[in-house]
Image (cartoon, rainbow over the protein chains, first blue to last red):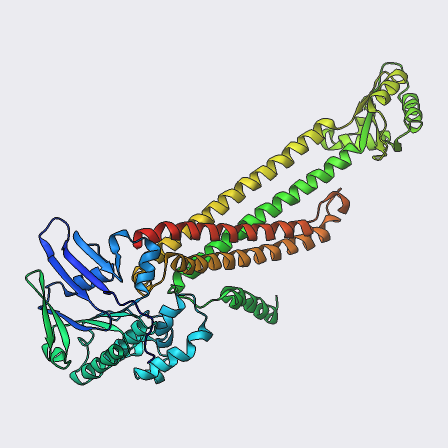
Length: 234
Length: 316
């Protein structure tokens, strides 16, 4: 993969005292503060139901915080208009827990989607997408539709789609949750390679063994509605 | 139609149905049942609208033609009066008419002709000759240089006091009103059909957007802006609308061509009506049909665009 250049050196994500409440109940997340640096690697962990996916959705701006401040790529998100939000999302790649591939498109079309929606002509990205599909081991399945792919293949297609626009930040929600341990290790190697080529990675997982495989990764631990940042694990 | 003809017709509609030229790389998941239903509804609406407009044009054309014919002819009626010789009055009136500039021809209806005109009401009774039947003179006018009908009427009345001139004005006025009414009714029907088409597109677009909510969310997350997403839905339904419009329009043109040929073949056979008295559907009707198709396409585009832009904000 091509290394990134000319990146801003500031934080990609900053949360300050962020709280989120659904309706009138108690807060789901309370006083969450953390930052994600460029080219860093971190896990977001915690027991089921502690708010990992909610926190990812706050970063991807699918949810608005009830209080506190969220800045993405140096911009306060409370001041974002629609165009600004789209521009920020184009700097992120997202791997959904349930893949979210479009069933009526082929693997190739799904992976190429982030480039297509930016208005690029197919001729300018065809080789790029084909190479990426080969890199994630889906070269032979590029014309297959999601319905005939296995869980692992769908996950790789979802990762390839998140990567194809060479994002500065990649968010992955339980990316190994639907695959066997051997494939989980392979997918993790993919994330490590992406990180080496310059993408900051945030993986939400509750799989301790997965986290133990990456030396130097920071852990953001959610428990009792709060987030604790643990130092890098060597 | 022969089997071969059926095959041709089937393949023509199959072509229109799939319309490869209008196909595009879709991001909107097509619901074939909904899409086909929408194409069918729009096709039927367009067909009815085009036929309504075509029929109104046909009727208005015929009325206009009759108006011209009636305006180019006047009828002089001479009633029997006391001891006056009706034959002598006819000669006097005919002389005046023939000597007037702007009169193209004069045709006197004989007593037998007049009796025949009354036959449908009085029957072929033998005593009809004994009745004081008025006599008619049909006067064809030179439409390029028509005479002053007022002056002509006065001249005839001076020579023949029992004569009166009917210039058919009341009939031409009535025909004009009928023709205007038909056109207004067809325009009203066209507006109704276009409204119904627009509503069908609105509901289909809304349904599709609600059904594709997850796709819209994914597209937002991977960096698609509202304009791009709106464009996908908008063009999908606008294309379906145009496809339905073309199918309905072509079906209407086929029916109009059939009507055209039938009316040309049968016009001369109609009792008492010559070919020149019936307006046969011409190229202007096909032009009107194409206009209806274009209007349906335009309505489809506007309806889907407005719906998409209203709905996408809510879904986002």
